Image (cartoon, rainbow, N blue to C red; front, side, top):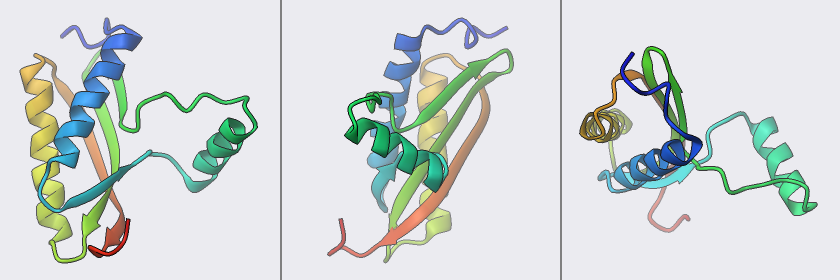
Length: 121
C-alpha cells in the first residue's frame, strides 16, 4: 500500500485544492468546474439553495484507494487553445502534484466541459 488509502478527509481536501490550483495555473485553462453529471450538480445546487446541502467539498474529485489516488476534474478551455495540448499539460500538472506528495497515481480523468472565449466567464 502506498499510503493513499490512509488519507484523512482533511488531507484529501488539501490535496484537491493543490490539484485545483495546479490545473487553474495550466496555460489554456479558463476555469475549473465541479465534476459530476448535470443532474447531480443541479441537485447539489438546489440543496444548497434550500439550505440543506453543503457546497464546501472541493471542485476536484480526489479518491484515495489501495491502488493509489484517482483524480477527476472538468475544465473550461480557452477557445484559442488546443484542447488536447491543454489536457496533456493539465494531466502533467496533476501528476506532478501527486508525485510531490509521494502518492501513486491510480487514474487522472480530465474532461473538457466548455470551450470559452476570452469574453466569457
